[in-house]
Image (cartoon, rainbow, N blue to C red; front, side, top):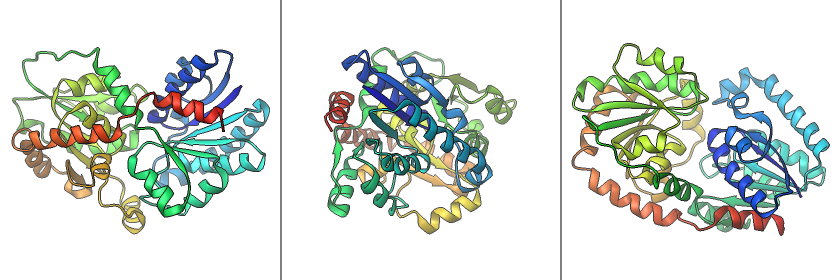
Length: 361
């Protein structure tokens, strides 16, 4: 059996690597080509393109790199034709993946989509392409199943969210460490553009909490200089590739909106969610995005469990005020909601069920 898997972001690399491990466990002779990252490569996939060369955030960034994106689309189609996979698996990354899926369906390939695009937030008309070009969709948020099946009459599979198991497995080897000062973790995002827009705004508050140590969660695909340039002379550490361990040893966290908000909740660390983008992207978001919350925690629970600060609200005064609250009065209620969140998302043998379903359909 031959599989071609396309992921375009760090989170997709995590989920894709687990799928690859499961595929090879069930069939050690399976051949897998993939777009993703080091985790997918180390799990046994033959890496075609790294997500470092694929991550463009926002309308202007996409426009600026349009010729590179078109070149990647063309190359991907040629590579798929040459490889001739039995199964094509797309992991999120909808702007790219849905274009390939449309082309692939016309070429009679079997298309499977893991991690639904957030069409319930915006671009809901993408559901037409999904229904037309995707053989089967595998969702990871409980409300997505109802969204697709009741609102759009499209059958999807929900086996749970893989992050619950990923984090549970990781935390088994992490011990609580005794520090001179309690830690506040800063998770400034997975893209350079995000980090440049938000990190210095968060760091403005560090002098207001001298009894705490602030530690930035660094990512391996982001150069150390990117963090150093924004931290400047502040006595703040950056730890790379240790996000879950850092969160596990932190009293609280300040997190850029995205998958990291859910990871922080599943570890159990009270958090503030921050989101800053350029003014044009914000203008588009206010026009088209139709959700009440920006963090996955609040979206899944359908209530404001964690405070969300957006654009100009991301400032020293607001972060200081909210951080004081989650370090004292709000900690217990947040952790209680986190437990309910984990129950909603837990699933057993998720990757095994997905691979079995793909192979049998």
